[in-house]
Length: 87
Image (tube, rainbow, N blue to C red):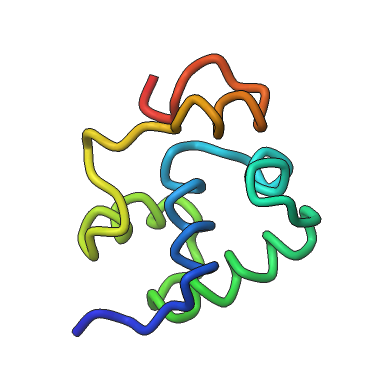
């Protein structure tokens, strides 16, 4: 059964699964890092884990992201990253 996540939690989990830190995710979403951390914590609870290392695996399982997913140009610019999370 797919867990219920808010649209914001889905956005945060996608960014986390692509390797973004709370600070990078906050810059992309226009939120504070503490708010991103709150969304991530609640989403992880809904996904049934307290281990950050499992977030990407669960994001793939529940199709929040895919192996082909990448940060958009805008997301890269806002986060300051040169590469997406898979590189």
